[in-house]
Image (tube, rainbow, N blue to C red; front, top):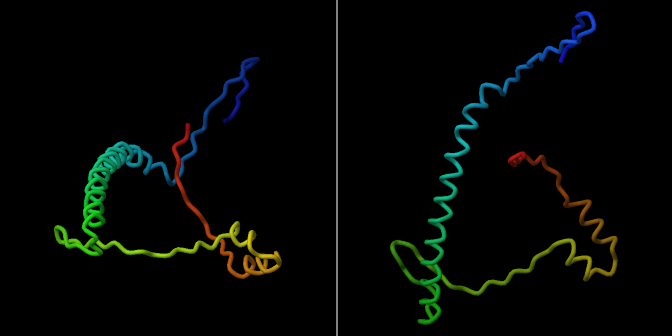
Amino acid sequence: MRSKRRGKQVIKEVVKKTSPLDPLKDEFLVLQPAIQELKEKLKTEKKKMSAIFTKVRKHMESEQLNEIQFCGFTFKLSMKEHCPFNEKNLEEVLEDKAILEKYKERYTKSKVSFGMAKSD
């Protein structure tokens, strides 16, 4: 913004700066409603699919089936073990905190994250 003085009156001129992103603004704004509409439709369809999955799983459990072919897809029921390793769990069991620090120093990685959120 620049200011010019004319007598006692100050006139402010707005100097619009251009950005290399300016040509993308219109396309970006046009795409947003279309994307939201598709997301809502996908969410609805996923709910329907989830209901089908639940019925297939209940059928498999009631019939004690480990595997079933259905509409060209193979559904499997299996027992899996999962042992999550995270900082909080390790802190609870490790007596020597230096081990955790050494682990973090060796295996911690940094990365650039890029995201988008709607501004108010």
